[in-house]
Amino acid sequence: MIGVSARRQTESRLKGISYTPQELQISPNLFSKSQIHRILYKFTLDTRHRGDFIEMCDYHQSSPSSIFFCKSLCSMLKPTGRLTYMGHKLITTQFPSDEAGTVTKASRELTDEEIPDILKEEFGIILESQLVPKDETMTPPLNIF
Image 1 (cartoon, rainbow, N blue to C red):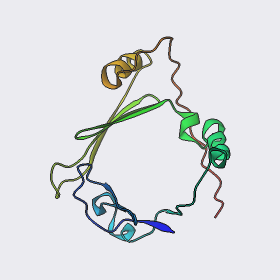
Image 2: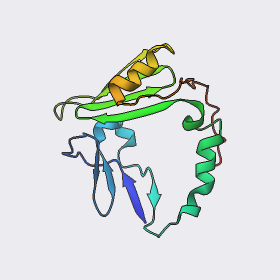
Image 3: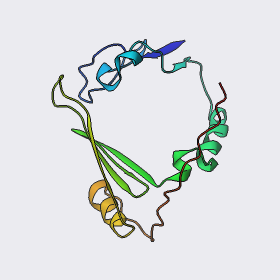
Image 4: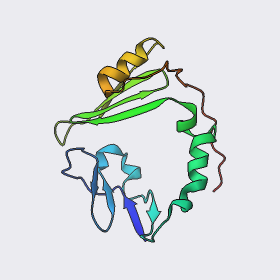
């Protein structure tokens, strides 16, 4: 079984994620001290087939607990961070330029009229029909653990 650990600083340009054959390691800069060394995910290298994912695909497309069902969403990795359109917000995430820096986030509200222009200018998406933005409140999932 492979574990995901938050224990080692990486030299990755993304300042946060680096992959090794044995584990996925995440930069401590992204977590508080109490979260470092905590296993976040576990998985095996067993072969999977498309059918293995049907239930979760259905969940993500139809559950009021899924961000993909409740929000219009588009996200793009940039050389210095990430740009995300979600619902009626444009979120800009800047990665630090040096090891001592911190990740910064800024967001701004968008009107329905601004969204097609943002999608075109920032993401290269040209809509063929009018977008009706989805920005519903998500229902927290049931705690099954």
